[in-house]
Length: 108
Length: 115
Image (tube, rainbow over all chains, first blue to last red; front, side, top):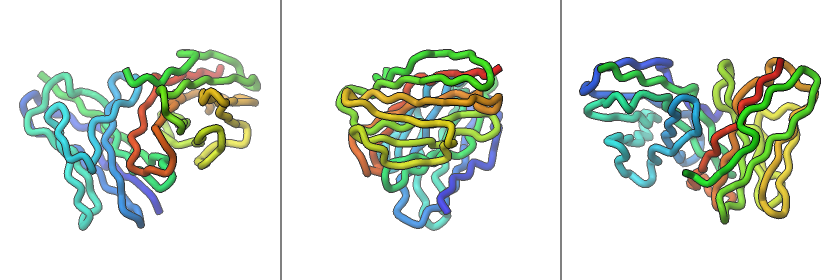
């Protein structure tokens, strides 16, 4: 079964604290994984994708095939990071399977 | 700005009615995807078109249909609307088919409210 699980519905941290948003996936093929961010229910914006291995806005994510995880991390959270974060699995044919999302709240 | 446009931004209608949502992909993108975002179901894939042809179907109800026109814009038609159809409908586009690695660029969404 193709599935993406984000176990935390809400993650609340203080500014400057480290952040880790968890994502686990289930997919029989070679996974393509993405993190999208959504501010105030506006359009989804691509944050990063695992094949590019880049860091955007200080966020990084590493694909761990053994643990079937693609956790999103940032060493020092900023208030402007407050948003909904969606982990997504790209499948053959291109459709994206999204997790339920994690709302990140960064308090001053 | 990702370049994907959607109209209208908001739509309020009554149960039993029919509406059409419109999406224009980024210039040069051939694939269009429709997603529904609701509070209870989250983000769900509905349907995909590539260069005018339907390529994949997700959890799309029979009351819903879509098409992609020669100019590559797409329309999502929702009929016999129910209260539960109230949601944010997103369109996304990507350059080509079958690349699971293709990044999808999302439009701003159409917020549908069924009263």
